Length: 422
Ligand code: AMP
Ligand code: GLY
Image 1 (cartoon, rainbow, N blue to C red):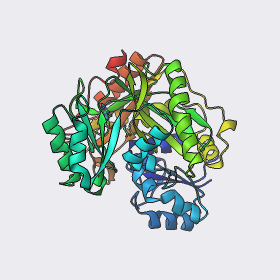
Image 2 (tube, rainbow, N blue to C red; image 1 turned 60 degrees about the vertical axis):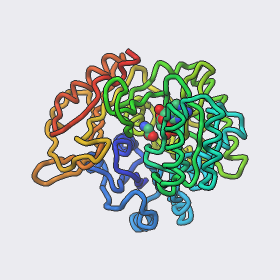
Image 3 (cartoon, helix red, strand yellow; image 1 turned 45 degrees about the vertical axis):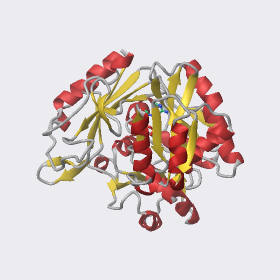
């Protein structure tokens, strides 16, 4: 089977690495890919959100199956356009991807099917005063979220009413997040530990993956601004089997059932960002795709042929595939460029990639191949340095040995990935 992976980050490198192990795979393409995927797949110079060019490429190159990494092409309707051209894909339709593309849609759906989530209301641009009044009806802190996609930056946590008013104005009036702020969700603040629970689904059957934990802040001790994620580990002990069973029953299954019942069946990865509160797991947000960097810490522990699982999701036959996980733990440490999460510096040479100890897998995020320097940095998150171990301690130690072998100017990484669980 000829397969195209859409995207060019650490998640897509991990997908390529895992799919490459499938005996069913013939040719593997990645659009646009990075220096890491170049060693496993044929990189194609098409942007992940260029829907017509991606469809045309598949037609011209006999691509039979497309695995979509990022959210933007999903919300733009890539899988719909591929289906119209007779090409199968892994990932939800445009309508189903609204679970990630519109926070108001996701919250309303959760309300309709009784899924635990923070109390909230949705406000449109004309409802500035109403939003401010609603903030005064609840105790702080207050959470203001732009409705649409905002590259992980659309969530403002406010500790005073003045800050909340300002956040509401910023989103609805100043359009700080562009069209994503045509509406906002104002919700109560939840306290607890966060957990990423991703699940494979064919639209009916839902199979949770092992739970993982991301580290969103740039600095050790969860300090500094939010990032796309500075590291992850799996399985996260906070996600006990009982907790996962509860989330499956109270969250994942009702949402997948409601999406089908309402005429927009969800096929792909349903990723629930959970807060483990005193009252039980509550949903912070849904993503309609694999998490990044969670995928880099979860896929190395998957025993199955990944292509089998993805194809079963697309065919509505997931119940026939017993998904199996290895014992042990996996840790991924992100090495980011100077300036990240602001404007990252690019074009620095990366050295030591071949010197990492046995057992360390380096997934590339923002890298590009260079004829003279080898590999150059080309994005905010540069590498996801990954290792598995019998224990979480072993995995952490090996991943950091890997980090220690690699160098580029201005490199930043957290030294406390998985420390909470140790
Ligand atoms: P989201 O994109 O909705 O996951 O929000 C990004 C981050 O903001 C989450 O990972 C949490 O750390 C934080 N966050 C979002 N919603 C809430 C909430 N209701 N209470 C506390 N923290 C939140
Ligand atoms: N790691 C968070 C995300 O993928 O959205």
